[in-house]
Image 1: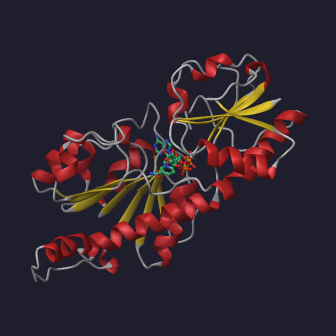
Image 2: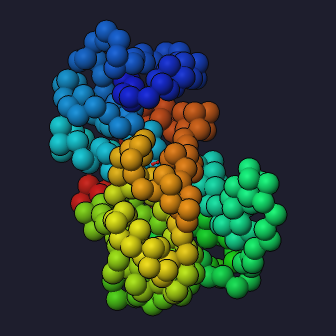
Length: 309
Ligand code: NAP
Ligand code: GLV
């Protein structure tokens, strides 16, 4: 039994080193080196190349290096019977919460505009927004959405949520399903997308949805680029209905050079950094699942294939 790491960025060595440091008894390979394919039982992946998982005849589990698993479901070479796990980690959740809070406050207090003014030596006071006047609507009240909601409440925001199933969270009204979606949207001065990317949620941030938001709402997408219909967002910002958007995720990453989001004055883009899996914090759960796999025990943090998250 052994672990293979498959990811196309420059982080393979750091993850491999850290896994081996914590579990010297386990064989861990990069998919880029020579390795015994038949020994691999656990593949830890982040945006793996298509068909990379086909070469492991004894694979027993595919583990996402992140909270999202959409890129695993997209890969039709992942065998149907194999469980898929994801990261559920308080550090990932608090990082996300800090990022969104920073983005909202930066928008409220015009900090980006002042940085641009500074570069031109322009002194130009602007009106600013207040927390107490704002209701933040969070689409997706899962591990990340719930943590964000709690932190926003601690910071005096009015917070509402939207999910598929009802939730009881003190101080937060959670709407569910399509029937309650428009009521939820009509109250959201700031709309935050923290949904998983599934068949149901692909393209959910579209002009039909934007129309239901209050005038001058601000949209933040920190989930996946596939949730957003880019042209619809541009239309609703350019026609003045939306005040702007903060986008951390895109259909294509890196965002193509010619994409209009790069230069739009009302769109704040960041390079998919809202919350990045922390090696030290995530490795124990990968290793625990590997040991559970070895001992035939139920795995932690498996996702539901039917639901896609
Ligand atoms: P999660 O725990 O699985 O929560 C997902 C939430 O979305 C749940 O509340 C779920 O409702 C709700 N939901 C799913 N489908 C829905 C639908 N069709 N209608 C309404 N609500 C729906 O996921 P998570 O750990 O919070 O992560 C969310 C996403 O964040 C990930 O999938 C990933 O794409 C993204 N992410 C981005 C970054 C970044 O750096 N930008 C970092 C980490 C994660 P129920 O509770 O009723 O099931
Ligand atoms: C990051 O995007 C994640 O899914 O963890």
